Image 1: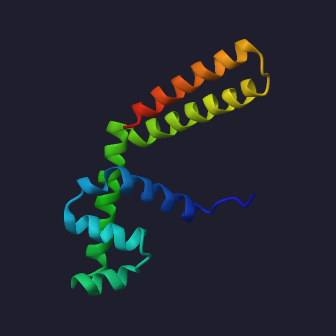
Image 2: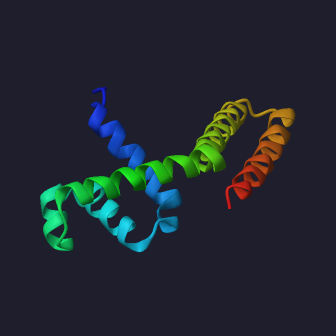
Image 3: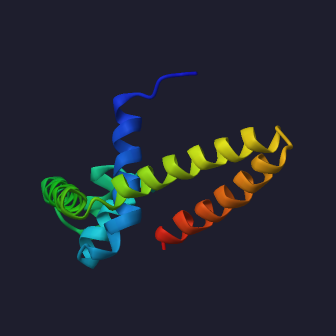
Length: 125
């Protein structure tokens, strides 16, 4: 498996932040952020589109990143989402191992674990 570059990790992080909190940014900041991180526009291209300097776009991106990181620091939605995913994966692994056994206790365990999985999944709403 190939290791991700620092740029890829940062882009992935920004994409997650935008998915969870992007709608909380002011419209213009959100648009600049989307163009840069999701559409891979350069600072120059965005600056030309918005008729401002590259420095202004850079400042907007910095402010947007800071705002989104602060939302995550306070609300921890991404962290919680990852924890829910880990719990669901663990439950799924346990269900798979119990299904292979076939005895009555295992069948009951599968039924109970399936219900727990359903309840945990509802927490993510």
